[in-house]
Image 1 (cartoon, one colour):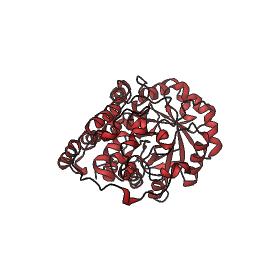
Image 2 (cartoon, one colour):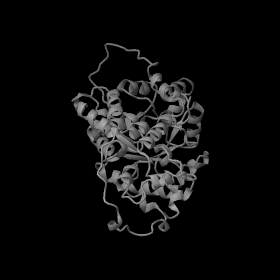
Image 3 (tube, helix red, strand yellow):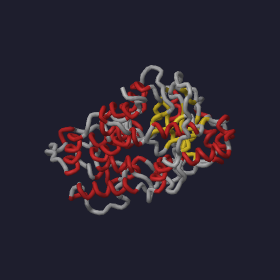
Image 4 (tube, one colour):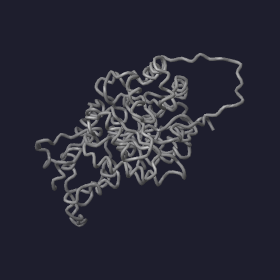
Amino acid sequence: MTNFLEAHPGGRSAILQQAGRDASAKFTLLHPPDAIGTLPPEYCIGPVDLETLPAPEEHELSEDEIRQAEARQEMPPVANILLVQEFEDWAERVLSTTAWAYYRSASDEEATFHNNRDAWGRYFFRPRIMRDMSHGSTSTAFLGMPTSMPIFIAPAAMAKLGHPLGEINLTKAAGTSGIIQAISANASCSLEEMFYARLEGQPLVFQLYLNKDRSASSALIKRVTQLGASAIILTVDVCWQSKRTLDVRGRLKEMTETPPPISLTAPVAGGKDKSVSEAIGGYQDSNLTWSDIGFVRKHTHLPIIVKGVQSVEDVQLCAEHGVEGVIISNHGGRQADYAPAPIDVLYELRELRPDLFSKIEVMVDGGVRSGADVVKALALGAKAVGIGRPILYANGTHGEDGVARVLQSEDK
């Protein structure tokens, strides 16, 4: 197996279960197509002799696949979806157990996840009447990037788990909708695929996790800069690999339903199967400091947005360190359980330090499920609002059309 067996981010058993078989389908589901090209040459020992592969076995639908197919027959057309929440409801029914568990999962007891959603309901409007409404537009800009609406697709990974075209659907829907997509560092499509799929002049921003190997990070920053990214989102709130409970349970269920071949069931040291979040993570540097902003700045001229800010004090520090924007976010409740809801931090910022809104552009994500939520954030001073899970759900149910429907500013 070469030394890569021990280095595989998803654990050695994920490879051993596919030993002697054509694993192309699973590879393209979990990895961008250029992933093999990033491996050291010594991991690639030569081409595969296709004549040596066993004959493909007749595939018998699993209970999970039967459930998905039956649910899709009942699923309404995209035009009949009226609320963003409905995409989530249908996604739970039509996605695979693995995909749903990864998309929906949150850390530990999921207190942060539920509070993110509930917090928006604690804020109400104070309507004023008899005002001239003959002028107005949803079009705006943040960090100099024009957008048809003050929303953006938040960086969310592994879109291919929901649809074979993966993030390409997100890029195309963002282009036709005139909004900005933030590309996940763990996208299941390659950077080139997404950049080549965009419309002329369509802005894309790139989410960056700093790698423990800083040379890999500097090369990646230069790569996305050369591809034409409009900004870098430095994500700073992954200090450790959190336990995303539903994701782990989903993996355990999958292992129970589809056990490995008998010849590979013997215990293997260090062979723990990993959940999706564990499989695609682990490379991030967990020891970030404020000096790392200077490291990013050294390798790009692009605006820098810091994502994962969760206190007024850190918004101020971001401004002092010269970054152009912040995203108030707790990673969708997927990292620190009992972190504050982003809308509450935004309110606190407005109350205690309104001056910071003129020094740095403030964005927010987490728990947004309606246009009303977006307006609440704008009223408190946010420049734009990120939407993550609903985009993945809609991609999983209706593909590009579903994503475009979520982003629709009005019924047409």
